[in-house]
Length: 107
Image (cartoon, rainbow, N blue to C red):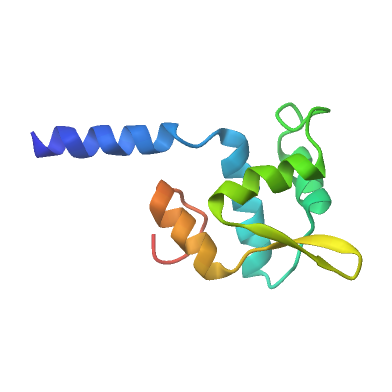
């Protein structure tokens, strides 16, 4: 019974996050690991390189910021750009809470 409950929770966890969110968070995690700051426009451009069909004309930098906000990632203004203000601890929390593999330890 417990195994079935654990399997159900895991399956539901995977269904709670749209693929676009996961793509954006993975790209953001890669940038943060590399010590790079990225704005929403740059994040969107990188996402379009990976999946042009998903991140088509209906996507804008504002929408990217709106997608990140529920995960606790805000944007901040720096040198005239709005940068995604994410830290490794934020991404580790998201990774463990949503069962994602963002390439961060521990998983």
